[in-house]
Length: 288
Length: 345
Image (cartoon, rainbow over all chains, first blue to last red):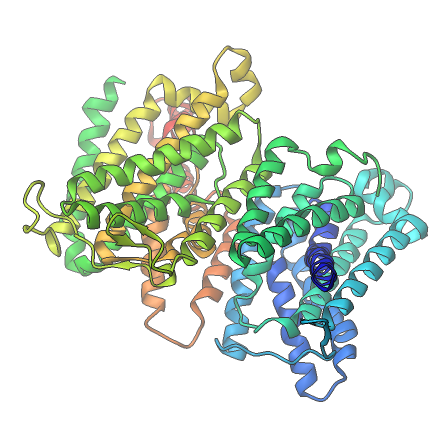
């Protein structure tokens, strides 16, 4: 019974962390069709901002939930103005340019912080269930993922801003004719996407030893989850995170963590072969 | 086709021979060897991306696979001839399977990129986790992160104690690169190559003409992988160790950068881009003021923004603008030149 509880928590945690890792990329790719390969580095920078803020004396939750997203969002804003806005509509070129940016950020962070592992301890202590130790921080991650999905849904579906954003993504010319500048909407969307990446990096930072190349560990997973999710933003994110988190945890428990990762990747290849438009290209059509 | 044998082949051999003669006076042959090998690796992606329109994010997978195949086979066999052949065949077969899966599923651009990227990651993760003694192929332990050291390096066929290393090894690699270059040039001039370029330009149209697009793409993909595998085997011989880093994302990224900087859709571009950037990296590695990765990133971003066609086409068009008017039939000449540089050159 205890084991079942632990496994369920671990599965929810795996799904939640996939949601967190992919949310920023989902906004940027799902809405703007820009594949941001520097996404992992945005997360890495979110982690570094958190650690720096905490060592400077800020409250850890303030650092994770406010400071990191804002700082990384601003970095994203600069990147959008300088590089990405010249490349809208050129899928492969944006991919290459953001790959260049990711290398640039890795180099920059290495120069500033050095090529060493840094980290902070988790702010929530663990507890025991029967014979097993459960990390209390996992619940925090699950909670944040749920709140995040809820907020995204509410903003996109419920508010006027979300409506304008979705409209501009579908028909930029029509949005411009109605008096909304697509340029500024893209800018704001990229800011939100980067901020979400920063948030995810900040929240996951206490769980990993942070090195400048940490981003590489996230980008592939995020990329796969978003592409496999397909055109619907939130439904796709939930469906693919759920599926991949479930599969990787089954193999992690049954064989080993490495096989869990490999199983996730194999599942992604099979899924893309069967449903090249992603899960929501076939099911849940037309949802947000 | 006639001008190919009478003009292009002799010209290529002449230029290459000159370079092979002059370059060792400027750069040491040990460094030159790896530049040649990287040139071959860049060339392999330049073929499938520039002429086939297949953006493969996992060219490093074939490179690493070639290197590992060579190392494992060399330990088991003890002579280098068969391992060299295997290092070409195994990646080619692997790519044929992978390519068939992707191209018969009609996957295109982004999805292709994701799948090749993921396959590279799977290989990287798997090979990195093989540190335990239970992962053995024949007499070779896979060794996880530490890789496989101490395998038989290249020797004269049939005489395992006559090693080829140092200067002769450089000449061996350079001549192999020329042979591969000429073979690929010939392939691109043949009807297979012309159809491949047609597929790059307009896949639906070629399919409607009755060509089997999926099969042709698979074959081209597999040829690219074979060249990458050969480069991998040569690299294994040069470094005398193979590690999982050969499969890493950074390696894949670098190959793509070489092609972009050198120029896609040209044969010489990716080779120049690879050798040039690898040498730049080597020079930058000798100073510690500015981080190497940072500069690589800046170079890629700047090229995508300002010179998306790459160096070789840019220099080519500059050349045409400055000297093109001297031709007797300017319009005809320019059109032919354009056709050549875009189509086959």
